[in-house]
Image 1: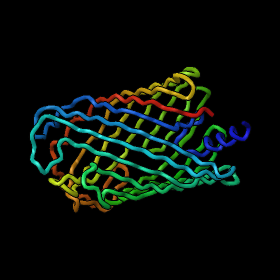
Image 2: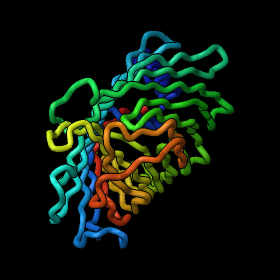
Image 3: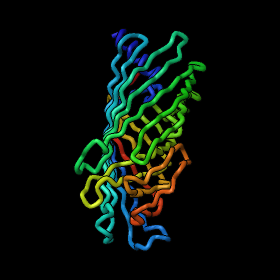
Image 4: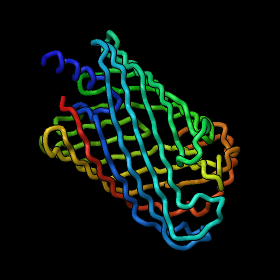
Length: 307
């Protein structure tokens, strides 16, 4: 029992996906966007609805007191539907699937700091006529420094070869126990949480999530085109411990900069970084994907290990 506790504490001290109190092992979630009208410049009238679902599994393997082989599998699915009629060469409805694997080594150093190096293959597709073009490859590297027992900050980079070209995201991995009740954690600029611990069962707070993803289309009418999804979700959350390791989390907020732009397979950019692209003179094919930002609700069921 004592050895098991020590190993779990090691996992907590270096994992990039956990706050200081729990490690989420299995997460099942649904995303429900409020129907929104098309943008004013769009030639279409009516409303568009966004729905999503996600499943995440985390499996850390403790090799010894200083090394963990970290593994995670994340599946995501997005549906964008409307009632309009558009040309056959435009994806409508939009149905996208993503399978992302992260695997790699977390190495704890003698000074208490750590290095995290992960390989991250992806299958990003509409599940039609899948071939090698539907796979993407990338990775993450982070050096994490322990400033004191309440503050750890990691510095690194995420790189992925998207269908539109290379995408590089500088990262700041933060775990900050501000006080007994307040904490902040996240992998900035991708996601973050500011959490207030009401009691042993309930946590409240603010969260954000924003990540650019791209998906190869295999449907015959628009084969080898791709969809670039963008959105920054900002909102409030409440997480309640139902029993044991089972938690229910609800989120409500607003999506900014949301788009599902379709491009020709040869329409690429030189480089993407957060908030900027270089060599981007692409032509969007689907004005039907230009719908307004709007409110969303998100619910997730989590099985977590208490540390």
